[in-house]
Length: 172
Image (tube, rainbow, N blue to C red):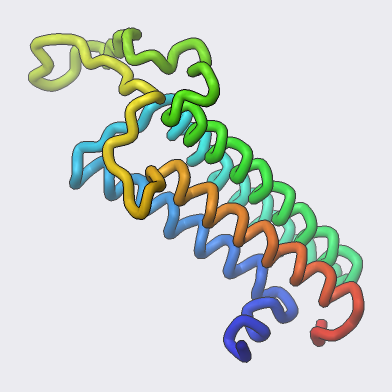
């Protein structure tokens, strides 16, 4: 519990959010590079959320360092929570597409061709992976489902950090 408290203290939550986002991106790219699990369009949307969070949190920390303010840090943590909330929605929507609950968006059916300007020894055009096909499930959840769980947890922790900072329970 003390480790969690220290991660929610001062500027440490935004830094933790940046590091976790970078780890999620590294894991996604690792699955792509080493396991040859190429991303579908909704997978790429999930990655965009993490990239956006990193850019926003780094910018926020720089601005906070220039002019430290308790209110700014609270607002930054709330914004981080909202971005992770967007990640939750995108990830669970993708999981819903995989389960057949939602129809796949245009371009997610796996029939569109990718023309990589014929670089390398490609003898046929690659196809976009379908958003409806999960490569595997762990404990009943696909990678999109687990991403939704992680994003939900991170959003909740962001709001806890914002609330605790606002109430002054954490030193700033």
